[in-house]
Length: 439
Figure 1 (cartoon, rainbow, N blue to C red):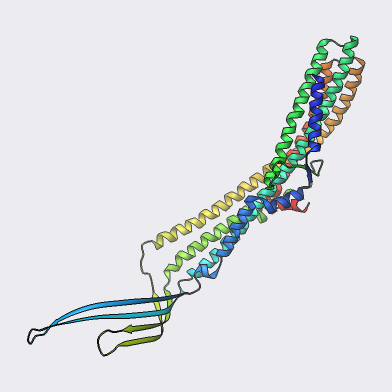
Figure 2: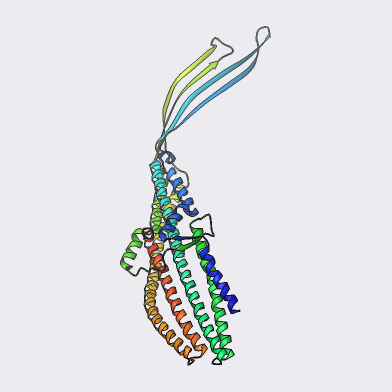
């Protein structure tokens, strides 16, 4: 059984090496994803739409010019009875009218509603840019976290491989001692059980590594989702130099969600201005230029053509429509709600920032403590191995020393990854997540 598992482990170690592998840095992953990720492509198209909409024409500031033509035919049948003699005269006629012309309509003034619409469209254009930024920041945070998860899972795989090597060596020693009668069959069976358990953990960990690089390929929108990628970094590089003052100031000034909330407030204020514009009169310019041709079937005139311009002004004022006051009240309430939403969001972001900051600091201390524990665990393992080789230490105690060493390495790895996740969250909340593109 031991030899079969050894063969399986050897094959598992060789397959990844033989498969197609691509070494990528974090920056390369992010750059590829920014070009190919589907969420980013979609939100960029939405941004283009909002940019296309932010025009004076869409706001209603330009006149409308239309060309029209028409034809009208009027058939008439007239029966006339003369008073003298009582005779009847029947007449039939078919009159025709042909016309073609240009007509122009232009709102010169409507209480600044058109200007307000333009400002609103430009605010929506800026909101489109902020939504793109939020999507990009979410992507950078997700891919960065998964990149370091790949490093974590890869390092954990190495630790499990090391555990298998230690268990294999212990099994070898136990078998040799069992043959000469120093160890009991119970010691041999326990060594085999521990070796099999470590081998199982190693093979299961390979699945986690595979799942991680598949997730990275998915985030990058890689066409070959199974392409094996390897992180160029071999350790989780934790930034221990973050400062609370800079993070909190950056959150207030640069957080994209807060900036978007500001735009929402501005939009609500513009909505109120648009409603108020109905309190003012409106002035429209109406102009045209056309040609009309009439054809008469009866009478002294056979045809008549008319060519020329026309122009006029239309001044109006809506005295009462029953809704204006209510709509203004609701618009003021919407402004108040938008401000409340911004304040609530800011409070929530600062709470998240404080929580991640506390976890970040705690994990930094945990890393220092676990590094000290690792030194002690290694020394403890070396001493236990010496005693085990001399036959002075039972197998179960040897296993405990081995487990203590592996647990210490696992705790450091977990603490480093958790610290990195806190770092990523702090950078995202404070509006600095795109700094990872520069690394």
